[in-house]
Image (cartoon, rainbow, N blue to C red; front, side, top):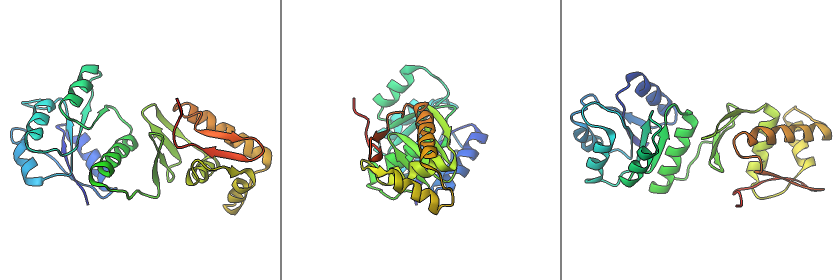
Length: 229
């Protein structure tokens, strides 16, 4: 179970993030005395640190510098400010990522998981939450989220997307997709399948993923694993 130190002075936001991260079995530690952040850091020895920029006494940049003098632990910055210089400074100080407030929680989770996988060679992933082309696909809530926003899918649309994601970069025939929908008691006709795929593509386009599902004429559909360009 990974330990996360959340340096956030907004008590309600801290509690919300702590509760949501606990659902993914992360141990989240907070700060009571913002004059002794390094003392807490040394005591907790976290696997990842999330720092708000605007803090009492000293800002998040100061504490990032202090942490970097002692540790290469991954750091994610949170900020309600939209100055590009904040992101640049964060990266220059050795932060691993930057999340703009307000944020979709699924985006934060995806960033945390990506960093932990990279730094600690951690490869396990919830069967209900998958990352794809920078987006988080939540099969339980039927939604796709990335930095462009969040899109709700119908159950049929999510079933189609899930099947295509299970076979990324492989062609899945129209018959196989319809059989999967039939097995799940949501049978669709050939024409209805076309309508569902088109609607799915239209929703993904709102997240700049409109080209992520390709049509293979006379064969079926394919979810790609990277966008060329």
